Image (cartoon, rainbow, N blue to C red; front, top):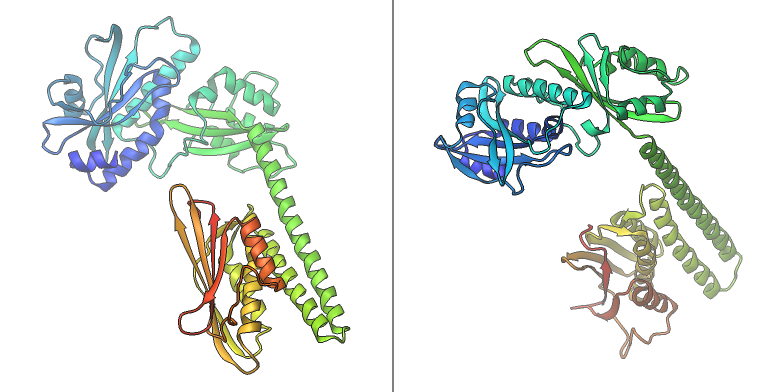
Length: 489
């Protein structure tokens, strides 16, 4: 719609925003009318109309088998559009049109904003299945007529009331029609069933909806002080009511077709099962986070025990081996601590990498600076845990074997995300400016435990590749190429 309006019409951004607000609401008008809606806007030169949006009803057969958006028609070909635009009134005159042997009643509704007519809604009703209307259908049609008059006068949609069409109830979910005093004139079968779910034993018709709804809300729970007023439909609002183990989502729409309040529409949906599943998911999320928190605590306990054991060992080799184990356990604990703070099994790995850098830098034999450039981005837990261990081993190896006591230098970790439509890869390098590799060193065959761990995790668990080469100039460069989830960073 944005492209069509900006390409063909003289409407400004505020007008376009009004049309977006209308289109977000007009599924209700289409369903209540049992009719297709097409929004026509006059072109910049005023000689044609362009269709910028279309809606088909969920409650009846369509009048248009084909998509109408983008069609251009010259002014004069459809006189009802001209009359609605020029006179600013709803036009219903004329005989039904025949489209592919189907009679279609056409009406034109001007779309008004701040006293100006921006365009015209063509309402097209398929008359092939017309029958004697039921009480529900009569209520739908009367409500549609009231909404159409509000659109024509600029009173609908309501400014600042953007509706989430996925979450907001629709006409078929349940509909209640109120008079100006908030008394129920009609309640659809679905609406009545939803109120029975809340514990209502009687019929709704003839009762004040606001008072009835407030009475059903449990007295032991905090009740919105304006609940009775909201349910009476005096203001355009959405809210939920929970009672008797049932939950209904309501939306109130005041009706002011001629400027004065004549009543309200209340749309409602039974969301009991949806809220139950949401609570189950919240409970599961909390349980998972608690598990990660306990795992982190247990790992920290293991690290503390290993640290105590290291202090009691006289052998420098044995002490060093236990301290390496402490750092390995610590890198896993960092991941679980981060996971315990998230709602899903994904982590922002940059924070983890920085903490691993700080932890490993404590073992630096000299004045060696460790830093990170680039972004790892968001990673799944099954990638983050082994990658944290790999990073720990590589940093530990660089600091221990690249520098001696008193040496100065730098260890830099670089991360680059490369995404394609089919695959995303994370390219990581760990480079130091230390002593460099011994002559004839083969990283794929080296027996060092740390490198064995790196090879196993990178190639086995992460499905990536690992190489260690001399850095340009001085030092050593380790390169990792790891596949990650595409499109996530």
